[in-house]
Length: 234
Ligand SMILES: Nc1ncnc2c1ncn2[C@@H]1O[C@H](COP(=O)(O)OP(=O)(O)OP(=O)(O)O)[C@@H](O)[C@H]1O
Image (cartoon, rainbow, N blue to C red; front, side, top):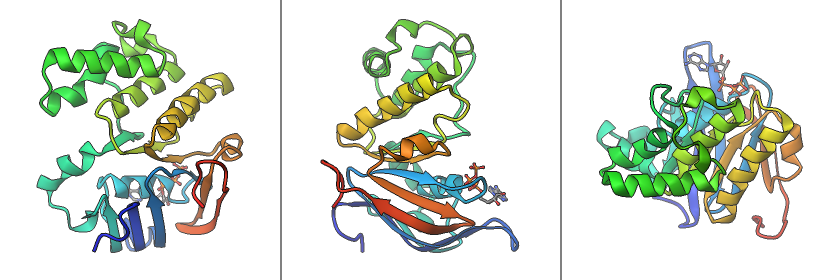
């Protein structure tokens, strides 16, 4: 029912139609294993955001089966959503930072909503900010940070609950090369620590360093390659 135990995410002939005419994904079959670092590439409108939103159950499949950590996402009731999302670190376009709260408060939030004490949340949020190199900005308001720094705060917020899977949608969009590299380095360090990562990107430079790239076009997987680099999937 849940496939091999090392598979974290399984798409089996998944399609997503927004309307009769808009088919964002068509017959996607894809297995993501524990520890994979996958880049999703493809032109604008190819379906990258939709694919990530399906995994997070922000959108539901129109047909086919999608399982995430053993749960059938298409059949998940809303009461099952918090459990699914607890295992996911989301760096998605709709997850903006709250501008009226400090950087530290933004990163503490996922912990407070899952029942951590303030003291515990503060300690772990500080550790997460330290990992992305922004502990010195903890008391700052997000709007006083650069785009790259804000994106790294989003990463800290996404990983503070120690998720097994990180989903990042264009995390380096609108960043200069230097900031984009910092964001990618932060994501790679979580991958190195064993977290499964799916990252959508337009940035071809990052594809060179990926161990697995899935190319989407018009809602379909048109190419898929993996390198057998050290630590990479076979
Ligand atoms: N909520 C929605 N309602 C209707 N159509 C949508 C919706 N979201 C996306 N689409 C359509 O589905 C298709 C795939 O969009 P999606 O955002 O997944 O592509 P993408 O590869 O992420 O593109 P980009 O790189 O521009 O973000 C597009 O044709 C888009 O217009």
